[in-house]
Length: 332
Image (tube, one colour):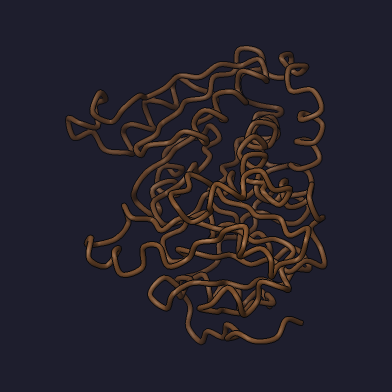
């Protein structure tokens, strides 16, 4: 067990846990949070992702004619483009709601009405929204599979699957020490990854200023799951132990005011010199976009995995869509 840091012990609940629903076996299921995913679910997605990664262009007969609706109420580059690429690689296509300013949302249409309409056009929906819990609410109004592509400071489960794929390709998924550093309060990728890692034999270290520590509800869930976790304010305290260092940006857009953001901006940055104290083969990850938390000089080091991580979004989202649409969707 790792030493140092503050172990997470929480006495209260942030709400009941959602039952673990298997994305592999349930027709027209939704992927809303990483808490749904069992180890078997994750391994099934990653196994299929490895198959697709070997030759992404060879699977156009999987779901010919299937349509994925992209409903993005927040900006996106990697998630949106990789979902689009994934659908097309599987033989399907996409319909895109486009910018909020150009849609009926601008006229005051509710999210419930929007997804009810979109459901009639598509075989699956990828939804990004600034409000935490929006994907769960939207899923109550549709029968086609809906994937949470990020809901405010909530969850981002498809990102977690590609993160796990990246970790597995570099170091396996058991007997690991993983450090997660940066904005742990508002970082939805962090929340989802922390939950998913409870399925594996890993030690999790969370490094952040006190004001950006993990939300209480996430800490409670990790405690209830019996996860091996500790919290730190300084990377140096744990860096030599890490097999993986997952760095996140400070989520400026989530802060209630600019003054609070300025207090923590730039506190956690890593350079090639920082890695002198790390294991030679530590994998440095980042969900991107990065601002200044990783010096570009690291990009050419073998430790840098964040661009591979982004590229893994295509085969992983291919696998996820394939499993969600299997026995349903556009190829019925």
